[in-house]
Image (cartoon, rainbow, N blue to C red; front, side, top):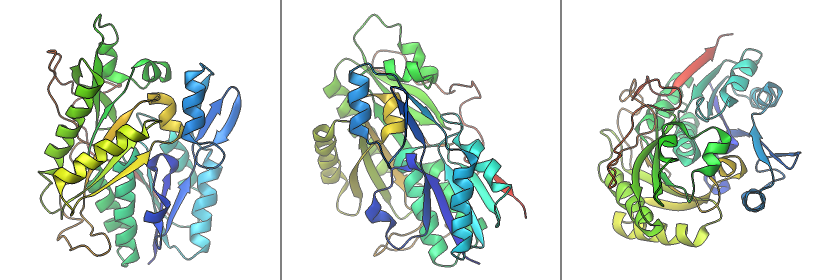
Length: 341
């Protein structure tokens, strides 16, 4: 059996990490001033940042089911006998619905996974699954390690303003921060696919320092069964700050941790706005090339919540557990729907 991986463009996978791996990517769409673009195809993050600064209307939309089906059919034609399709949190986007509709018409079985994450928290999970698949693992084992990796990941981020999240309806519990009379800099996180407020600080420098501390804390206590972590520093139109943060994290975490800077793309960028910095700390359950192995990659860690977030509020707000839909602190982990054939 040959298992192919499919994801969407919000994984923001650097091309060099995809070398030699069987991963298909379906682009989401962004609309700027009435003109629709495919993320990563004919629009980049800089164009979105510029449009947001000029108050040009920006919106996003999911791919059509036909776009997923085209990728599934191509994977089958190339020899795949099963597909694991991993996508942005269903509470952030309806992308998962398009994948599920396409899965029902796929020529080979497709397991559709709601990652409850985005960015490289999802991207590293896809890479782990692809490496496992390249070694001949079953679709069930591949799906298991993808879910486990997403569940155990930590994502924290800082936005210059909550306005873009408010406009896009993705603000969730962080909306409680909007009415503050103080000039605050919010630190947010992902929990089970939702955006949650973690801390409120008074300056951007303090916010970035707290991101660093949270990332170091998460990286210093990887879950059992992992062989370490990978770290991604995301940003939108803030490369210098991202580079400095990545350099500090690399120095503190040591050479065994891969810390790379990955710019957010047009779709997520449209909702968080220019100046955003984020850190994803992702446990390594499947060794990268040249790294040691980890036992039990598919046996542990299921049934937990989605991407983790933790923190304390120096202004007294504390951590909030539920997301936009009010479904509670930690749900059933990354979800999946399998289309049988």
